[in-house]
Amino acid sequence: MKVLIRNLARTTTEAEVLALFEAHGAVQSCTLVMDEHNGKSKGFGFVEMPNPGDAKAAIKTLNGTKVDNNVIRVKKAEAK
Image (cartoon, rainbow, N blue to C red):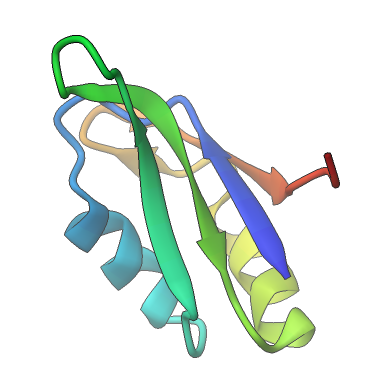
């Protein structure tokens, strides 16, 4: 299941996001969306978890938590 993480601090790293989600189960991929002009984070990213149950638990637990002084929003990513 693909999960969208929004409102991340621009300083939050992929490793930090990965660690948050790995606490809830296996993570297939973790990607922060970067600005192509300055190479900095745009403040959101995606995590893919192979087990939907783990992904739902992560969403429920992490949505509304504070990471690097920002309250993050976590939800299931919509299909394009």
